[in-house]
Image 1 (cartoon, rainbow, N blue to C red):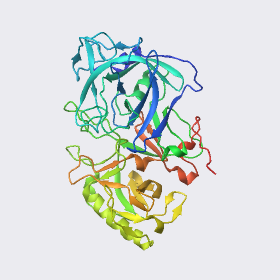
Image 2 (cartoon, rainbow, N blue to C red; image 1 turned 180 degrees about the vertical axis):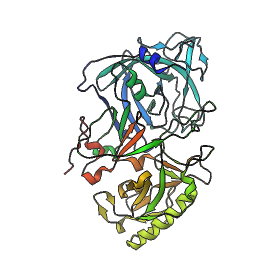
Image 3 (cartoon, one colour; image 1 turned 60 degrees about the horizontal axis):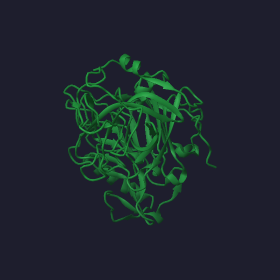
Image 4 (tube, helix red, strand yellow; image 1 turned 90 degrees about the vertical axis):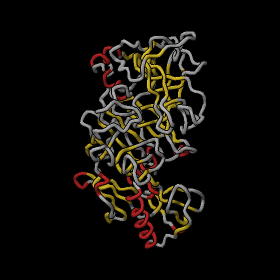
Amino acid sequence: MASFTSLLSLLTISFLSFSSSSQLILPIEKDPITNLFYTSLSIGTPQHTFNLAIDLAGPILWYDCNKNYTSSTYTPLPCESKLCNGSAGCTSCNGPFKPGCSNNTCGANIINQLADSIFSGDTGKDELFISHTKLSGLLSGCTDVDGFSDDSPLKGLPKATKGILGLARTRLALPTQLSLSSLKLPQKFSLCLPSSNKKGLGSLFIGDASFSKFQLTTIPLIINPFSTAPIFTEGDASYEYFIDVKSVKVGGEILNFKSSLLSIDNKGNGGTKFSTLNSFTVLHSSILKPLVRDFVKKASDKKIKKVASVAPFEACFDLSTIGRTVTGLDVPTIGLVLEGGVEWTVYGGNSMVLVNKNVACLGFVDGGKEPRTAIVIGGHTMEDNLLEFDLVSFKLGFSSSLLLHNARCSNLEASGNLISIE
């Protein structure tokens, strides 16, 4: 495996126009069909604009280099390169040279956790354009994609997308590569997912974003010593982002379930992680069952009327019986109690899902009795919350709902400041 130093020597940055040397900013859109999120950037010469799904667990940026894609600045990574770890083999191609068709090329594992297979592609370098900045020498994967069928790398992703932007804790994820480049961005990124495109776009800040309007609560990120990736080498740790949830509250009262589910066991099972490829938060059955029970009881105490469930949700309610607050529907709060007693409070805007004009459901789904991870915090729970992932101190900063500050993710300025939505 190549050292970070050798990776650094290959990366160069040339500037077109850039107002700050400490961050790059990408827009985030929410797909109304899948409820997943994607961003946009340009690759190659001539520039090809790609919408890429955002994946916190993605180890690499990969895109569709189908038969119509060409780029004069693309350079395949040779198999003998120190940056090629060999996990995806060495590829060759009988066709004319182009991105995705070259000989003696370091293979790339094309991973989409929503697909049923792991796909093969090529690893190469090409120019990327982010925030009007040209970035040269960054490594990515490309593969020839044939639509959104069940055997496609794009399965389950928004129809507008042609690949994935991976943000995992890996050396080929974009935040790490940019921190090692001549740009020397701080090795951190901030994610602010929009609740709806009708209210504006969210933002992905790579590098050091300054959020001066309020303080983020900071907690440790933890490492699962066992890989949770679909393909790995024995002894690999997980490159996903886990936090140490100690207990769960509903309406301020601690939920009664087997607390050992919240710990990572000696096989890597359990614990709590983030996932932007899960639309909604997924819970171990032994956590979801008491959560639904207590939530329904406390909702009843607020005179909220329960109605028939709507799949995949188990607890649904008559919308006309639910009040409104600045943080969304006025329902019992859900609290994630973290290390040191810190609590991340989930309000109605992040716990409830409008399934039609008359019904709202509790937006948590059943992960079964033997899931790999006990709590998977999905995109809906993260919407209009600012999350800062510091990959050096390995800490997470979170804001809780920006609605408490009379703001949304769509109201973040390029400087990282909040704009009032009054």
